[in-house]
Length: 206
Image (cartoon, rainbow, N blue to C red):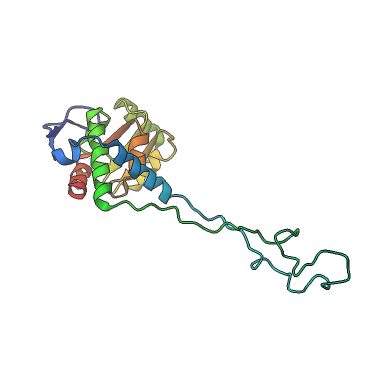
C-alpha cells in the first residue's frame, strides 16, 4: 500500500511512500491494544511504598514491665502493632506492578495502532522534519501551518534543537522512533512521522 507524503512546509511531496500492508493495513484489535496500553502503564508504576513491621522498627528490646503483679495487661515489647510507635501489623512492601506482554503481541498491537491511525487520517507522513533553531515560536508557526495542534513528532535520532523547540509545548512532543510507545500514539490527535521513521518501523514491526 501507499501513504501520501508531504514536505515540511505542507506541500505534497513527489511520489507516495510504499509501505507494508502488514504494518499499516492491519485490522484493529481493540482488546490487544488495551492489553498493551495497560501493560505499559503498569510498567511505569513506581511501587515503592513501604511500611515497617514490629521486627523492623527501632527499640522495644526490653520487656516494658514484669509479667505479673502490676495489674496491667501482659506486654513483651513496646513495638507491638497496638502500641503507639509500634510496627504495622500488615505492613506494605515494595511491589512490582509490571505485566508480561509477549514481543509478538506487542508488535501486533503497535501494527494495529498505526493501521488505525492511518485509516482515521491521524497519521501524517513527512519526507523530513527538523528544527533550524531552538525557538519555540518558530516551531509553533510551522506546526500551525501544517494544521497540527495536538501532535506527537516521531523521528529517527531527533537532535537537541528539535527537542528544545518543542519541550515547552504541552500539546506537542518529540519521540525517537526507537522509544515509541502505545500511550503516546493514542493520546495525541495526530502523529507526524518522517519517512525514515516509517521505514525503521517496518523493520521492527514487520
